[in-house]
Length: 412
Ligand SMILES: [Zn+2]
Image 1 (cartoon, rainbow, N blue to C red):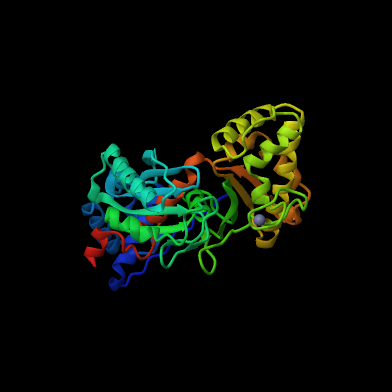
Image 2: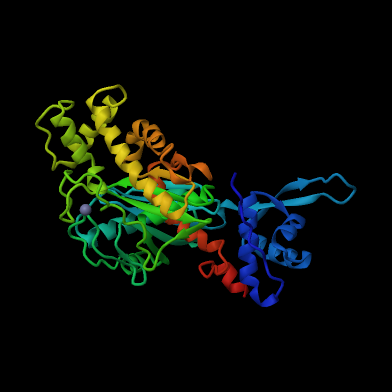
């Protein structure tokens, strides 16, 4: 069962912005609410709710959605819901293999998406491409440009959140201390928020309704863990939480760029799995392991063969056991109730990994006696990073300090 926590408002006038966000958040969580229910949910007075709802209606952030006739003789209650076109947020997922841009409406629905066409190693050219794609996505959606609140970027770690800098992402060898936030802000004129890819993905899951305490296990170019504990996204002391890629799961495994052998990030890469499959005779020899597209095609073939028994399945089963051990340690350390898998490689690995990880964790999990531990895959597909990046912007609209919402800021 998921408990949706509704924030309580305060009846002091001087914190109007806080209350606006509280009311907006209560409407979002319940989808539709009447003014009376809003007062009950938030603890605000009927008069305060009336004023706030008027402001939100005028700002175009909520709309009336029909009437609800109660059991008594009182007058019917007007239901309120979010106005999807009230605000929009852009999400950018910077992945070493593909950069994706999405536009979300106020309810968190994806209204447009597009990959960045020209993938350039040069940071400046790539940022140009991202800025151009952002404008294309906004234009394709038909959203008025002035209703776009900001851009969230999900980037591989490590990142320097305070300065908006991508420090040294793996597999982007030309990227070193790139001031992505300011560069993109200069090109788009929009407020930009930078966060880690795994943290953005965890935020997206939270938005999609995953509550409680869970780890988002990201399988992409490297692996990482996003954390939500007690309904809150956890960022750590420098927003670089979740660097689990160098946990050693196989001391005789592949050499990692960190200099050691058998790190879980390296052991999960298609390149290494394909190499093993060739050695086991599952795939024909002669695959160029430095050719990303060739490796992807071979990886797809291997995953398809893993549907039945044989060496391909054994390779992925071994991988699942290794990942299960890492998940088990994170879950035990933090007393979690769920792992959500996702990232670019998840969909292909899921048919084997999902059940095998669940089986591996059954009985081994320390807390099995206290509460169950759930193994799930993301419901948001391969765009989870980009959706999460946009949700970082939307999150601010529904948080107590919605300084990114001009309409609300102006009211104060
Ligand atoms: Zn390593």
